Length: 70
Image (cartoon, rainbow, N blue to C red; front, top):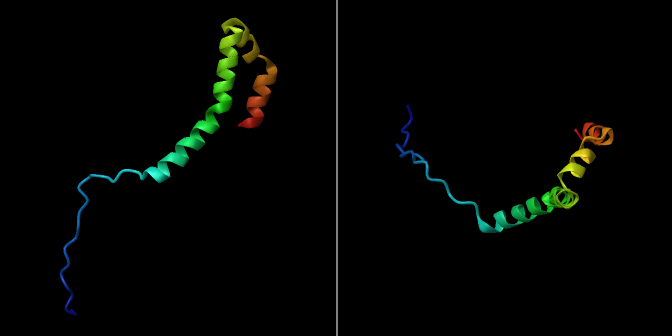
């Protein structure tokens, strides 16, 4: 066997580094932008009232749109 140097192996102890702020901020901004349509629909449903919103959500058009989306 050729003389292999014995190097210590560093073991991770479970402490993880935090995500850098410069990476976290754009992701948070994109998540907020992606949630805007859902927030808009929720606000319109709140203004219309639960009964009207429920009737609008259970139309065949909504299920067809959901099927095309998925």
